[in-house]
Length: 226
Image 1 (tube, helix red, strand yellow):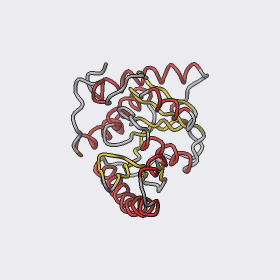
Image 2 (image 1 turned 45 degrees about the vertical axis):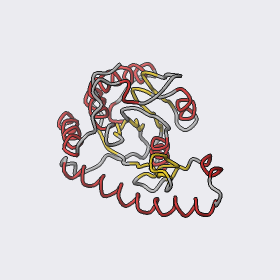
Image 3 (image 1 turned 120 degrees about the vertical axis):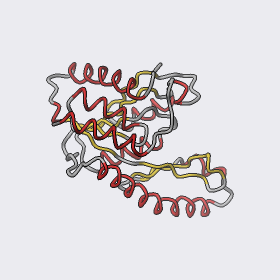
Image 4 (image 1 turned 90 degrees about the horizontal axis):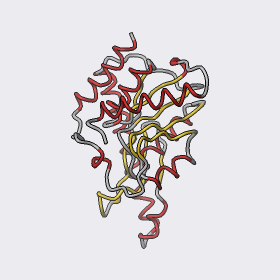
């Protein structure tokens, strides 16, 4: 459906503008577009640029099952919000070991998310971050699968006093879409497939982003705000 993340962001920006305008007069200054790195930053940059809204980022990382790094048992954000998939507990014969595993990763990941967030913002020359309290926060990603990191980001937006939280993404599987709808004010997804395999299947180009690509996307969005 999408050529690349920039193309997806432009399509998403058009749909988001229609949605916000239909609700009344849209004031860009009341809305902060937040990219969820890495892949969500180029998407957010396009959205922020087209809507002329301030941009920010929020890093959230998955908590991995110690016995299988491919399996996510939760997620943690840079503000310390933790989301756990309690369903995984039933596969552990020792629930206390499960708790120790997620706690150990949580503390390490909070530090890593904050360091990475700061490094990208400084490299992009972003000296002052927009205030989230009392504003509409639009969380942008290049796609959602399990929704763990997105839910951690929603928790952070709520923690920081957002007046409204919107999740905006090119693709979300139907079951995750229903879960996210219960967690925030609105979910705007261009595709909501029932038969979902992976986010990358919806892109022609879905390469892993390097640090400089994340930084350049942020710089682009910041330049358009001047």
